[in-house]
Image 1 (cartoon, rainbow, N blue to C red):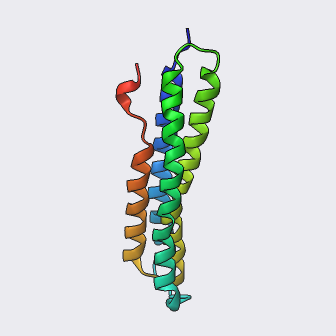
Image 2: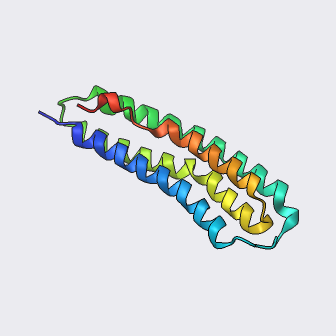
Length: 141
């Protein structure tokens, strides 16, 4: 019998670690660069638009995650179940990486312009997209 509990717990653990990292890194950046002077004030609008545009990559990646999740759930005790779970783990990590892109661009925006509001908006956008990749706890037995 194939036990899916360790896989669900690993998905939850990976999601929590990636969520914490995407929150802690911008806080550390602002704390370290406290009185930072703007290095490229003209890049405020293009960097913010680029950060928002990366949301489309996350939406595209979520489709692959959703299909991998459906496949892993449907293969209960078949020999292909282990490969389906490995594919699901891979798709979740790729999706979380893409979901963190707006926050990373927000950190680049903060370094370039020293503006906190776009950083907060882009980090919150990342957190909203990261919520899509949260495995439901009801499925863990």
